[in-house]
Image 1 (tube, rainbow, N blue to C red):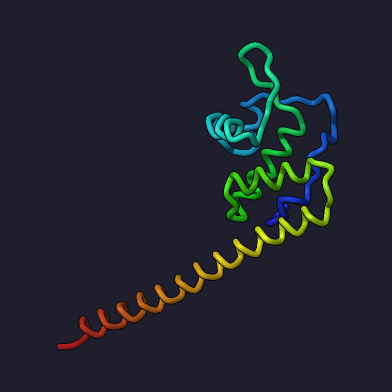
Image 2 (cartoon, rainbow, N blue to C red):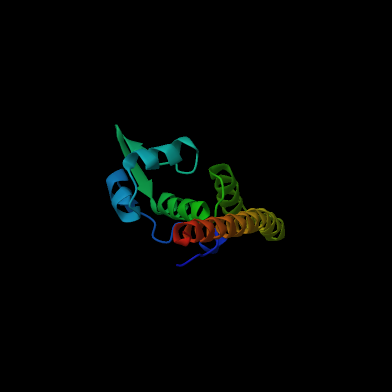
Length: 139
C-alpha cells in the first residue's frame, strides 16, 4: 500500500495460527535478521520462543509492517511503538487519532523545513555553477 498511514492496518491477527520464522520475515520485508532482532529489543515485536528459535505470529508480522511504514513516514521507533501500541489498546479512538495527527503534523513541518533548506541549497549550487561556467568561458 503506497504511503499508507501507520494506523490503517489493524494489528489483530487476521489468520490465527499462522506463524513465521525470523528468516521468512527477513525475506518478505527485505530486512536482515539483525534488524528484526533490533525491533524486538525495542519492544516492537514480541515473538514466542521454541527453545532458541523465535516464532512470530501474524500480529508480529503486522507490527513489523507498521514499523516499516512509520519509518518511511519519518517517525522515530519510539513514536512508531507508541502509535502501534495505542492502536492495539481498547482506549478511546478519538484520542488515538488526535495523537496520530499531532505526530504527523510535526513530521510534516520538519519535512517542509528540510524542503525549504534544500531549495536554498539548490539555488546556491546553481549560482556557483553559472559563475564557474562564466569563468571558464571568459578569456
